[in-house]
Length: 421
Picture 1: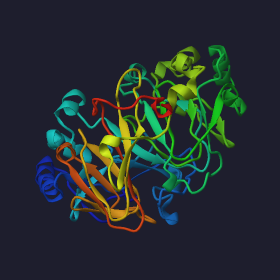
Picture 2: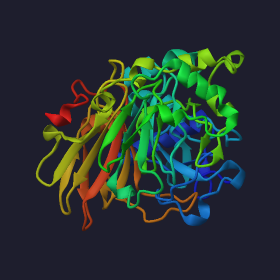
Picture 3: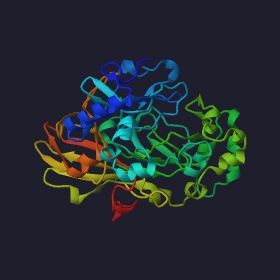
Picture 4: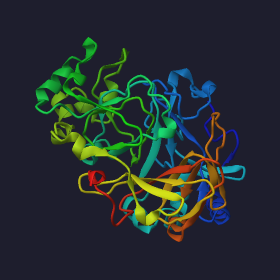
């Protein structure tokens, strides 16, 4: 199969040539880097068909790999799929007719691209975002904490959701998400569900609660919390990891193999039901105020908004007391322009309209063929963000872009619940 960037760009493999072409790209783009679309399939899900991928390319990796239901943004994190391509999940920078991994670019020019603080602490760009887009719900699952993921040499995975209206013209099959466990649920009840794995539906959803999904809103999902994401197309800022454990044995009539429950657990614990249940953050799962503590609505950042443009927080708050990632939505009205100044790097995806960011064109595609280059995705480097980037709407409808940030980028940001104030 052909990787997404192979058809229109020549790969660069040596660190010396990456450094040379990266410097040229940064100079030409004034600190902005054009990124190629990064497509990721999931064998256990059905594509929702709203992320602009051409209909004939939904199974571009082969039917055995499953349909493409995700597009990853500014990613230096590999997708943890079986039978994966070597670069699956990794974003490519495109400059002229050449390409190179964003991961290699960060390693070469970390101070300029992501800033010295992040690279010194994490030695990489430790976050990414994506669209996930499914026809129906994802199995009820959790992502391991940092401590539990470390048992298998991985990192934990907190994440957040935002449901962009531009990518949700239809609900698809089930626009509700089961989250957490019903207060009063016991560990033995969850253990019983695991014991019933091979008897069809193991009943894990009987212990949970579904929340209707609303366009233009979002959620925070801490590690160790069960969730079965519904069928709205979702923008998902998250930590740079792909660990998970599926706790639901049957979804929409499709079997979920036991291997997807234990794939990120020590091999000697694969049949240890008490250990498996113990990876859940119990207090957060049975929280009696789950929605109050995890639901998010956009908040206008008046300090970054002005005549003809509005910047909104769409992902904010702390997870276990830490600012691990955040995200904003910028809307620029027709004919307007603004200077975007942020304290740190970000990955940008255009979701509506046409315009420019600095010297780079911005255009929201109607349809993307697998391997085709687009003009909707940009990496805004640390130096460019702090120096200010001019964005102008050159079209007849609002220009809208989503951008996500790394850890501890902001000295002050809203907290969960602030939208009610």
